[in-house]
Image (cartoon, rainbow, N blue to C red; front, side, top):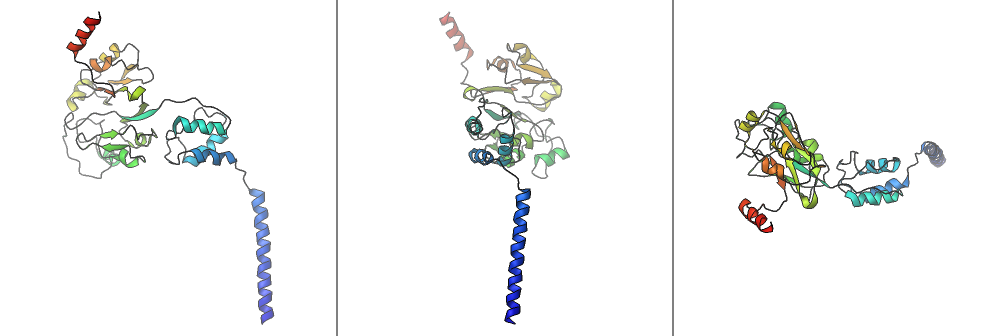
Amino acid sequence: MSSVLLLSILMLSLLGIVLAIILYLVAQKFKVFEDPRIDQVEAILPGANCGGCGFPGCRGFADAFVKTDDITRMFCPVGGNDTMAAAAAIMGKTVEAKETQVAVIRCAGSPENRKRIVQYDGATSCKIATSLYGGDTGCQFGCLGLGDCVAVCKFDAIYIDPTTLLPVVDEEKCTSCGACVKACPKFIIELRKKGPKGKRIFVSCINKDKGGIARKACQVACIGCGKCVKTCPHDAITMENNLAYIDFNKCKLCRKCVEECPTGAIREANFPPRKPKIEAEVQTEKTE
């Protein structure tokens, strides 16, 4: 009996050794070489796995970064220029610094500016609400305020203002990953150049209805009058489908369009308060 047991143990051990050798040979035959620089690049990435770079996670970005010959089009919005410079150094390359961007809400349709005409009583989701109707105001383009953008933000950089019922972006926390842009079914969120000291000018409206209809739905809607286009000395504003758009690469932040806009649809951010016109005129006369 003991000899049978001993023989069984011996056979099983021999079988295990044979299978281990086979597995080793197969592993050696089909092993895939991975560039060790992928691990190095991944190590310096922020690990947010937000997808803002266009790849499924930081590992995917690091893999693509190491394998591509042209790294100029690759950028980690969360890590920013410092991270990209460090990653490029691993590859023995250099990259040009890119302008910092920030998410901008292109709707100012608060309850004060945009009256509610219907009551929505459904799932708290912009995506679902959009599939059901145009919105609870006369503007079918405006923000629904149900917070899809808030739900997808991994950096706690956006919230719904309880008074305006509109999203508010925390510029210090925003990494411009673009998750909120993709989540918004109304396409009211845009990544724009953050600008010097955070200064930027943009049209806070995406309503493409004709002027009268747009103004009836929202007091601060763009009515497509074109005054801003004529005023801009830098050809930074275009008009398409009754809606003005400011090219942030051409805008010189002169603010002339802000003053000219009859509805206040063009907004300026992080500028110092304007001086009263009378005081400004007196100062101008003194300097002359």
